[in-house]
Image (cartoon, rainbow, N blue to C red; front, side, top):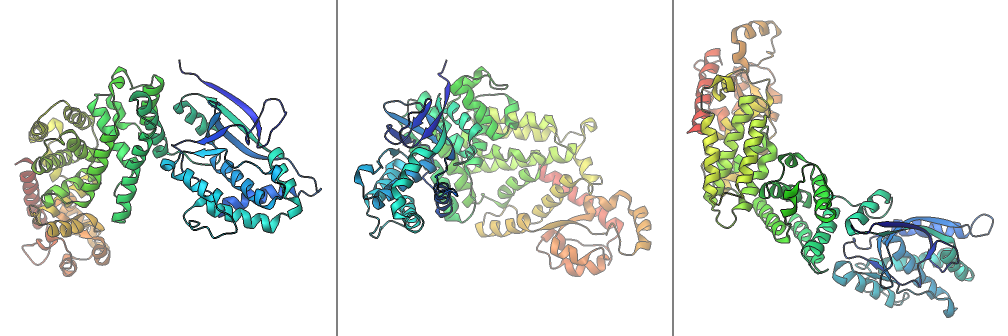
Length: 584
């Protein structure tokens, strides 16, 4: 059983004779662990900190008023040192303040030590910056002032003390800080995971540990304990985060995020180690919280059975995922069709399974080819279009099939076999088994009131009207911009709510469901659609020619106006074209 103990003390900076108390200065080293963020307090925080100290020192009755400055969390003392879990910003600022007060205090015997904080953040760079700041004389120009937060704050503190504390009071102000400024110090004796859980429970200031922060720290602990990694492995983990930041900055866009990568890794871990299917739907933060609880603390959680003990996390896995995600963002597919496959997956009722694309690439990275990747994306998108339209809602049948595919990626050595499984499932749906809801019949019904079906089928028709097999990169990007990023509406060619109110009833009676069918619906830029409103076709067609969508320009009524027979003929043509694309 891991050691778990919590103790609480009243703490002051200077030595104290009080029982159950702790002092900081002269009581060993206070270590800022490698997994902490850098010292980050700026002008606002430092000025407020100093102002609060001054106001309590110069109280209304001219007697310094004791001051409570919050909670601090530290590890138990070991080898004359403690790790600071929460309190870095305040403790470091106190150290800088003592350094400044030493400069103003002529009594050298009462100068305070300024070497009791040791920081391991950023490969020792933080310690170098702190040393450089302390070793520079304050009345000289500090060369690295603009990049060294410690130097910046030393200058702030120096100016504040000079302007707000009487020189005769410097020694008294120092004694006030040493003896009348109180912390509640929470001392924890536990592993890192438990320590951070305690921090999350009591933290009110300092760093906010989000999913990314927690994963970094707990992954570090996992590698140290389970893989016997050295302390420097934390820098390798930090490099993963830095790679993402660099990519986002270089692209001037959010290429990816650590949250995105962790969600992807969640899918891969569940698939690779055949974990419970329920975990696919678990919130990513909760998933890793429970995963690390099991791996590091052997805590039993629902869905995390014995198979979880086989799970292996690695830096190389995450590095591979990050590189794939970055590369994907900056490249196009072999064809427009391949590029569009991703969007059809995202637009479907099963949009979470776009991550199956990266899982497929990850599973078969040693023997994947561009053609295999293209085939996988396109087949998967076709299948999800079928399921989205055929059932009119998300169904477990589809979820279960995709989960089976995901897990098969890590047991089947041949990637073509995965594509063949999807293809077989597509062919199964070409059946005319009406009990299951025939895709073609659903496509030919009234779809205007079913948003997913309406948008999927109309967007698919729009793609099929373009040169979707083009491999020209410029053409792919231009067409993708039109098909995916234009603000669109699904236009009723024969207006449903005709602008002539007296004609509405007769139109509905004549057209019946055909008015809401695929034959009478088409994608159209929102800017054009909002201008033409519910006009007659003969009026709207002058605006249609301004559209960038080829499918709009293919409208070819037999007479000058758009009539019921035109919509029926177009529905039959469109449905046959989609059926041929999906199933042949």
